[in-house]
Length: 108
Image (cartoon, rainbow, N blue to C red; front, side, top):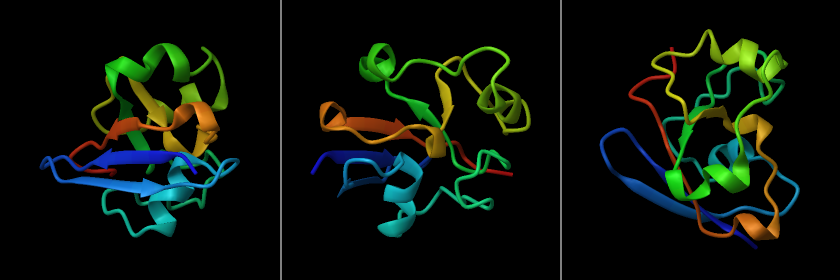
């Protein structure tokens, strides 16, 4: 099972195992990782699962497609950066073992 590391805004890291096929957001929620609210439950409708993708993973994860629902929702997220993604839109696969995501100071 792939391991994902979630890093809170204060630097606290949480490394958890997430089943293949689940979203990075679900991995955080299922393991009580603070900093991802997921108000809409993973429907790409709220932007409260916003994360920053670690630079080493950007090529593999990619960025939201311009004009997509995810890109639109990110316009509502607080403090976006060029490496911003919604964690509900990242499906965990075996090749994401070791993924590192960072969380913004707040989701609202």
